[in-house]
Picture 1 (tube, rainbow, N blue to C red):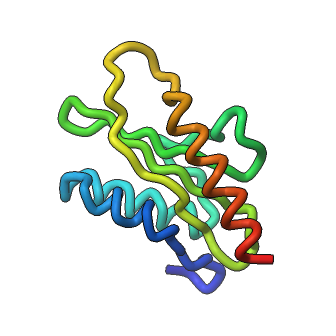
Picture 2: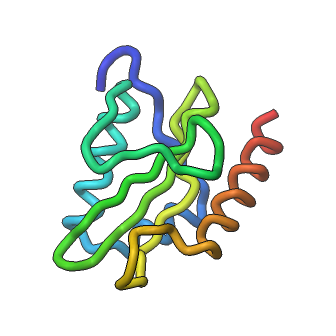
Length: 115
């Protein structure tokens, strides 16, 4: 962690879902989050389309499964993880609409809480 590293904060439900990831996937995502908190733009990270600027998706393939972790850098003081899930769909790369809706709700709630 460098002097300019943002702390990584979690929405409680996102942390709970993240804990269900296999240990190797958790370790890889934590490494990616740490690099992002240091100001980097690591592999497996892309902007989350349709949500707004400052929201990113970690799309991690791991042992034949796909794991997604969504975080935001909207808040200068910290990087916030707002959702984590295993992508179940075997066709296409698009994030399921139910997950997108949940991400939007959590982001709105977080913005209200941090005002």
